[in-house]
Amino acid sequence: MSELCEKSARELRALIGSGDVSPVEVLESCIGRIEQTNPTLNAVVATCYDRAREEAKLAENRVRAGEDLPSLHGLPVGIKDLNETEGLRTTHGSVLYADHVPAADEALVARLRDAGAIIVGKTNTPEFGAGAHTDNRVYGATLNPFDLTCTPGGSSGGSAVALAAGMLPLCHGSDTGGSLRNPATWCGVVGFRPTPGLVPRETRSVGYTHFSTQGPMARDVRDAALFMTGLAGDDGRDPLAHPVDPSSFSAPPAVDLGSLRVGWSVDLGVAPVDDIIRDAFTNTVGAVAGAFKSCTEVTPDFADARDVFWVLRCVYYLANHAERYERHRDLLAPNVVANVEAGLKMSLAEVGAAEKGWARIYRDFQTVFSEVDLLLVPGDARSPFKAADGPPKVVGGRKMANYMDASLVRSALTLTGHPVVAVPAGRDADAMPFGIQVVGPRRGDSFLLGAAAALEDHLATVPGLERPIPDIEDYRT
Image (cartoon, rainbow, N blue to C red; front, side, top):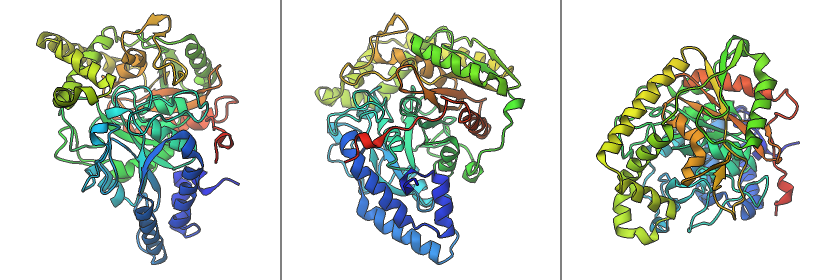
C-alpha cells in the first residue's frame, strides 16, 4: 500500500474532503518523506514546518465543522525559491539574497493559500532561474532521483525532484526557455507552461512578453489542472493577465483522442536533438499514432528562432539584472553574467530585427494550428547530463555556442505563446526518464489539459511508456 505522500493530489483532496484522512496526516507523511530523502536529493531547501502544522490543524477543524472547503484544501505544496513567501527564506538561489525573509507573500502564493494550499517549503533553483542544472552557491546542487550522478534539469529542478521522490503532491515552477518542461521530462513528472498571463505575476519586469510564465508541476496532468485552480487568476498589475474562472480548471474536459488531428516534429526543423531522443520520440509517436484521427509530421518555420530567442532573452536579462550586474558582478552566477554581457553588446537594430522575427514566428505558427489540434515534440534534446560535466557542449552533432542552444526544442515554443505541457513517456535507451511536449492551440489551455490527460491515460496502457518511478530505497535515510 502506498504512503499518503505518494497519492495523487486529487486522491488526497477527496480523502480530506470526506474526512477519511486528516490534513495533519497528509502533511506529516510529506514531512517524513522529505526528511528521509531530501538529505540526499536536496530538492526542498527551506521549510516552514511549524506554520504548516498549525495550518493543517486549522484545515482539519474546518473539515470537522462541515465548512465549505476550497479546491486545494489541506494539500501540501512546494514553492520555487524565486517567489516571495511570507516569513520563509527566499534566496532566488543567490548569495545576494541568502538572508532574505520576505514580510509578505507575493500574489501567486497568496492565491494558493486562499485556495487552501499549505506551503511546506521552497524548492531549489539555479541562481535567478538561469541554468539547465539546479545548483547554486546558497544551497548547492539538486540530484536526479533516477541517477544521483545526473542533473534533474532546471530551473524548476527542485520541484521536479520533490514530486518524483514523493516529497510533495504539488509543486510550483516557472518557465522561460523550458524551466518547467526540462526538469519535468528528466524526472518523470508533469510540467505545464500555461498561456502567458493566465497565472499572473505582479512583479513582471517586461510587460508584454511571452517569456516568463508561472505554472504547476505534478505527477500527472489532472493534478496539474487541479493546481491551476489556485494559480490562475486576474491581476491588473500584470498587463498580460485577463479575467479567468480558476474553478474551470478543477477537472480538465474529456477529450476523445480519436477525434484529434495531431502533428509531430522531432526537432521543429531547427533544434539539435541527440539520436537517443530521436529514437525514443519516433518510437513513442509510432506507438500512439493509431489512437488519433490523424498523426502526421509537420515542419513549423522556426528558421531564425535560435537568434530571435537569444536576443530577446538578453533583453529580458538586461531588464531584470543590469543593476545587479553593475553593482555585484563578482557575486553573480556565470549564466546571469553571460546573458547580461551579451545583451550589453547588442544594438537596437538587432533587437528590432528580433522583434520582427518573433512576430513572423508567431503568425506562421498559427497556420500550423489551422491544420492540427495538437503538436507533439520531444521534451528535451538529450538525456540528462552528468552533473559534474555541466551542460553539453555538443548536441545532435552540433557544437553549442551557449547553454541555451541545447534548449531550442523547448525555447522555440516559448516564442509562440501557446500552452505546452510536458508529459512522461517511459524511459530512453539510457534508462532515464523520457517525455514529450504536447502543444495546444492559442489560449487553448483547458482543451490542452484535457487532451494531454487522455494521452497520458493511453500512454499508461502501452508497455514501456508508463510514467517512470524512481526507487527511493536507494537513498532513503
